[in-house]
Image 1 (cartoon, rainbow, N blue to C red):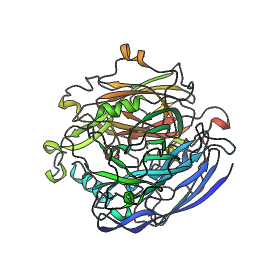
Image 2 (cartoon, rainbow, N blue to C red; image 1 turned 135 degrees about the vertical axis):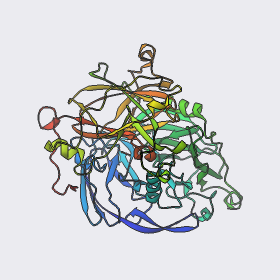
Image 3 (cartoon, protein in one colour; image 1 turned 45 degrees about the horizontal axis):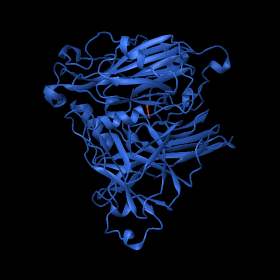
Image 4 (tube, rainbow, N blue to C red; image 1 turned 60 degrees about the vertical axis):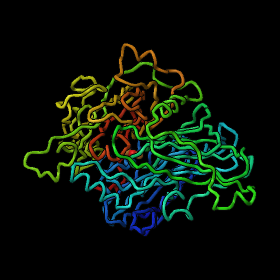
Length: 546
Ligand code: C2O
């Protein structure tokens, strides 16, 4: 196994998009940032230097970080932010994961432009469990704002209203030729007739679930979130922010140019969303000249309607592990978390300018009615490891404090989540089942729920209220897919299982950044087990303190 050394300099860089030049926060002047390519078993050592005027951290999304929680990255959870002028070296080893992950800033909304791909090939000497593709192409789907994304979230936090939606979606940082001033920079993916390309698709967007398709071509899904899946063929993918999907595409159509396209899956009823379409071009190198004429538009695919929940659900139900899964059959912890939005009454004495949510309220969000508040004087991990009191409390409820008709017509009195820095403690090795139940408080919405430090099996999902008497019959304990981000269906639920075998403090949150801003998060503390191999490592000497 190799060790890969990289320097990441976070800095402001002029970036021109949609006819305007912005001072954009990037890594090494690149947007998206550098692609990291490693093999399973390799170690990464990444020295991050912060030359921007914002606090920053980098999270290695989906990397298990076995015993190396100090390198996970979420600010105030596993480290204090790297202050402007500061630096921190992340050191971790890829253990057993193969496929596509990614990295992104985990501080305010910096990840809007600070992100990149992490490609994990099989262990040296091993091969893919599918025929080796001729080419591999990472495709990072993103969102672009015509304003500074940090200003967008600051304004939303001040006013209590929903933030502005993005102005464009992007593929590898480019909106594509359906947007103004973007045509000549549209991403081209070259192919030879007959060859197979492995597309590594990442939804690195901030707030939007996306449908993805390629005109006239079939997509064979072979992996997701750096785990292989039983291959299946589809024409449309749906990815929540945080999720990755690896697909094989064979150039078996007439030589021509075909659009690769993504647009919103907007599941929240009535909520505004960016209704534009981003494109790249699949370009047959052998295409005859007329097809190369750029005044002739590439073949346009059919994308599902923005509210096509049936397509999103059918896609997510197609995932299976390639072989019998190591899903725990017995459970020690039977947890049930509600996830959803809420509205806070305008605090007494505050000005209407700060209460511009629906009917003079402020938007909020919660899990089990707790709206998560980050600490500020110590990271949770440091407080846990050094036994510093007063930073968090361990009373995060394992089940909803109040039972109600979660997906029904919910009363106003349930719309006031309680702010808190609450964690839930797990014993080392605990076998955990967690029902994640969406609520319809204010509005029902699909939530991409991401757990740091773990992969988990999604053993069932459905609509309405989870019913333990009926729905346990639907559990797949044979070959459920292994993921790090679950797309909890709109007005429905997902059930996940995992074994708490990685000691540390692990954030779980909705990967729509607007929801994490509003508090849709919690953290698990997983205690040390017995012996060195079950114990969190000591913190690195350069760990940023608050
Ligand atoms: Cu990719 Cu906490 O997130």
